[in-house]
Amino acid sequence: MSRFAASKRMGFVLAAYAFLVAMLSTTLPTPLYPHLEQRYAFGELQVTVIYAVYAFGVIAGLIALGNLSDHVGRKPMLQLGLVLAAASALLFLFTTSLAPIYLARVVTGVSAGIFTGTATAYLVDLAPPERRRRTSQIAVVVNLGGLGCGTLLSGLLAATLAHPLRLPFAVDVVLVVLAVGGLLVAPETVDTTAGLRWRPQRLGVPPEIRSVFVRAATAGFAASAVAGILSSVGPGFLSSELHHRSPALAGLLIFGFMSMSLAGQLILRTLPERHGLSAGCVFLAGGATLLGVSIGTESTAALFASAILAGLGQGVVFGAALAAINQRAPAERRGESASSFFVATYIGLSIPVIAAGVTIEQTSLKAAGIGFSAAVTVLVLAVLASQLRAAD
Image (cartoon, rainbow, N blue to C red):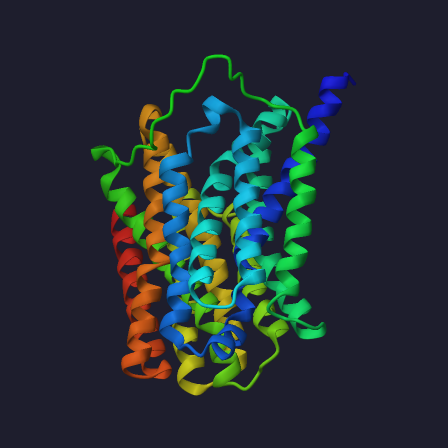
C-alpha cells in the first residue's frame, strides 16, 4: 500500500470522526431543555424558538457556504465548521442568560450546514473509487449516528454527574479539539490552485420534476416537523406531564428516533423504488398519530412507540425522496434540486415547531400536541394519496 493510500485511509477515519463530532454537537442541548427552562424561567415558546433557530443557521450555511469547499478545499471548511461547533459549546458553557443560547444555536446550525455537504464530499473523495457509492451510505450513518449520540451523551452526563448544564459542553469542546487536530494531519483532496470562485448555492426545481419534488419535499417537511416537535417539546413533556425528569430518558427518546431513522434507510434498500415514498408516509403517519395519542393519554409507551415509527418514516422518506429527485433531475440541476429539498426539510424543522410553541402558550401542551399530530397526519396522508395516484 502506498503512503498516500494509507494517508487517505487514515484521513477517512479522521474525517468521519470530525463529522460525527460536528453532528453530535448540534443535539447536545436537546435533553437539557427542561433544565434550561427552570434555570432561566422561560416557557415552551422559548424552547421551541431555541430549537428552531438552529434550522435557520443550517439553511444559511447550506446556501452561503455549501459550495465553498470545491474552491478553498475540504479541510479549511470543515475546520471552520468545527470552530463554530466549539464556539457554540463555549456559549452554552459560560452563558448566564438566554441571548447567548439563541446565538449558540444559530452558530451550531451554520456548522451543521457546512458539514452536511462538505464532509460527505470529503469522505467520498477519500474513499477508493470502487467504494464511493457505499461511502455515501456511510456518511448517512455517521450523520444520523452523531445526531443520536449527542442526545444520549448529554442525557447520560446530565443524569449521572454534577453540573448538568455545563459538563456536556465541556466534554464537547474536548471532542471538537481532537477533531480539529485530526483534520490537521488528514490529506486535502481538492486542488485549490485555481483560486476562489465563490457563489451561493442556487435553489430551484426543474419543471420536469416539479410534481415529484412537491411530493418529496412535502413528505420531508412533515418528517422534519415531527422530528422537531419530538426534540423540542418531547423532553419537556416527559418531565412536566409524564413526571420522568431524567435527562437520560429524554436523550434516549431522541436517540431512539435517530436510530430508527437510520434503520429506515436500511429498510428502504429492500423496497422497490416505486414503493419507497409510500412506505415512508405510512410509517410517518403512524408515528404522528401515536404522538397525538401519547400526548392525549399521557402515555410514555405511546411516546416512545411514536418515536420509533416516526423515525422509521423519516429515514425511508428522506432516502426515497432524495433518490427520486436525483434520478429524475437533469444532471446539471441535480445539486440545486437536492439543496432545495434540504431547505424545505429544514423549514419543516423550524416554522411548525415555533407555531407549536405559540399554540402551547395560547392553549395548552395537550391541545397543541394533538392538533399538531392531526395536521401532520392529514398532510402525510395527502402525500400518500397523491403518490399512489401517480404510481397507477
